[in-house]
Amino acid sequence: MAKTLKHLDLTCNYMLQVDTNNIKPKKQGQAISVVNVGNECNYETFQVGFSESAGQRNKLCIRQIRSNSNMKAIFGIIDGGNNDQIAAIIIEKINNFLQKQVIK
Image (cartoon, rainbow, N blue to C red):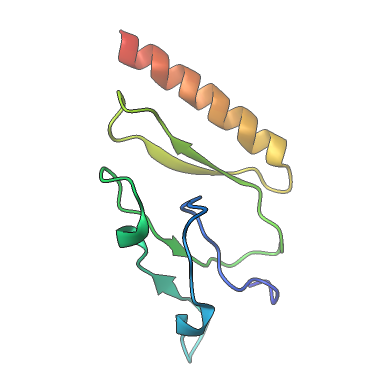
């Protein structure tokens, strides 16, 4: 786990406020903290949260798939490694593919 990583928000909810004092790591083994932030998300369709995961990088390039209202159950996270552009391209391709599938 990167020593500089405090918490990783995968909701992309810019209005989310997290008190890091309430995040308690496990005492034994790898430190993992999970906080339920589902109640703070404005989207009634989704229940989302965040967690920490092990890795060698201190900067993650993550993009979120959250399709428009005519696709009710599509949600995903793409990690582009060290390249944010890769994640953005993958998200664009997946969204285009899903739009074509819905139209069929």
